[in-house]
Image (cartoon, rainbow, N blue to C red; front, top):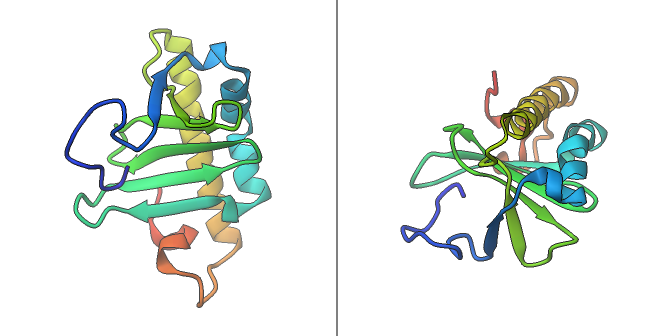
Length: 141
């Protein structure tokens, strides 16, 4: 997502993207609820990368049964969940027509970024950690 291919379509990211309201999938509801706790429990579950061509900053959070991927900068990209219960698919959860569902996704993004910031303050990166894996690489406020 940091440097997406120039074509568009359902296989743009190498897997099928489903646009399903998060409330319809137990795993999606659980992922949105547990994302912040996952960061606080294990800050190494977060990978922040920057696109070489686009300059976009993307955050990937890997939990026990899910991964969440979204743009940090610019912040208007898709919010994707990859769930163990749906192998081979990603679920886009930021396009639901229900304002409460959109607010839930935006709240999750905000809380995850806040947890990442708290983690970077409490644990400076080791000198041998690759730059792209350091939580402190980007100022998230």
